[in-house]
Length: 169
Image (cartoon, rainbow, N blue to C red):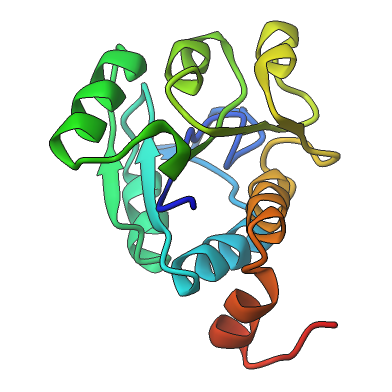
C-alpha cells in the first residue's frame, strides 16, 4: 500500500514554464485539480513529499497551502536523496509512488513501486512509468496519478469521502 507520494515540481505540478515578475521574483502556475488530488491522498493517509531540483518561494507557499508533509528543494541527485530518505524512514519500494516528468526524475522513479508521469513527460521517462497520465504537467496530471493509485488500492472512494464529504459510486 502506498504510504508516500513523491512529486517533482517543474513539468509535473506546473507546466514547466519559468515566469519572472518585474522585480525578478519567480512565479509558477499550479493546477487546483492537482491540489484536490493531494488533499485526497492525504485523506487516505498518504504522506506527500515535494522533491525538486530548483528553489522557489512559490513552491514553499503552495506546499504550505496544501499541508504537504515534506518539501525538499535544490535536490541535485534525487535518487541518492530519496534512497537515503526511504532508508531512514523504513519505507520499502511498494510503499512509495512517484510522479515526475524529466530525465532528472528517472533514477529516483526506479526506487518506487508506482510511477506516474504527465502526458508530456520526456520519452524515456514515460517508458519507465506504470501509468502515463492523459493530462499534461500543471494541468491535473498529479490528481490523475493519485486517483489511479488510490483506485488500484481500493481507497479512492473513501479518500474522497473523507476529504470532500461526498460519496462516489
